[in-house]
Length: 80
Image (cartoon, rainbow, N blue to C red; front, side, top):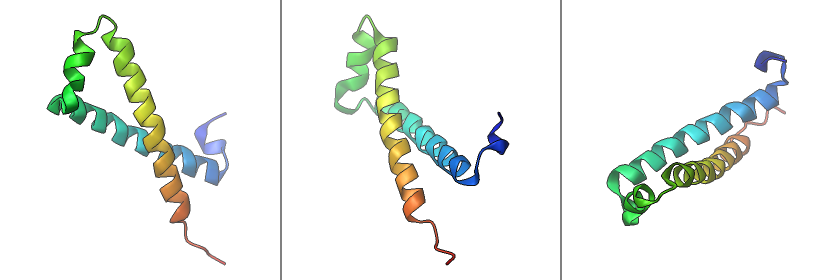
C-alpha cells in the first residue's frame, strides 16, 4: 500500500501531521539552542540524554501534529 492509494482525506491528515511534527522538531531545536529554562543543560547533563531528547521531541511533536491537523480541518472550505 502506497500513500497515493490512500483516500484523499487520509493523505490530507498525514501531510498536515508531518508539517506539525516538522514544526515541533524546529521548536525543540530552538528550545535547546536558546536553553529555555535550562532544559538543554539538564538534558545534556543526564546519563540518558538521548532518551530524554526523544521523549521531549515525541511529546511536542504529537501536540503540534494534533494542533496542525485540527487547524487544517477547521479551515477546510465548504464546497456545498
